[in-house]
Image 1 (tube, each protein chain N blue to C red):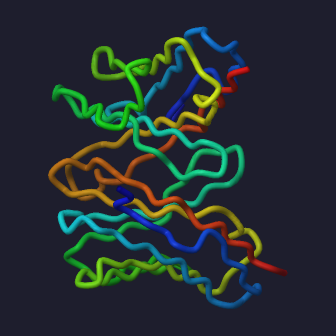
Image 2: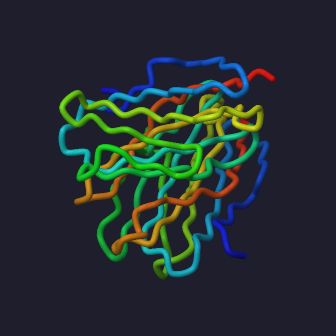
Length: 112
Length: 116
């Protein structure tokens, strides 16, 4: 049972344009969400988080949107840069346990 | 160091041998996680330690896998009688639970395990 799903395994975007990465979850108890970026042969690095009391959180070029009714969140990267090329994972947990479940990842390629 | 430290960074072992992977979390972090990523797959939850509570072992794939956390700090993941399907990168993460900044988990670089 995949509780956190990233249905797009890959995405290619032109440099300077917007990248939109999507994530869906099934567990209505999830109320805290994280996005990570992972380069090959490195551990994932934290990008941005959002709790269910918000529907948007912004940090520089990165914005995460949360639609609780649809159990959907998205990460927007504007403008996209070649250095953003990596695999992006979303993760979800409930604030009672903080047991994070990760999606399968989306490989983003930003074309120069 | 300031980050999560894992050792060994790479391990090649023969099928049937036991391996131990070590994780040194960020100092003061009360929560510690183990995940693994097989080739082409996502991050699979294995086990979660939180303070003095009983660990959540629900992600361990078989009884060949076990983990302990001594003194609330260093953790060891042990895989007994390794199989080729155990080949993966094993990632450890830690978190300072509680408070406004305590919900982010920080990963180590991973231990790459190859079973031949």
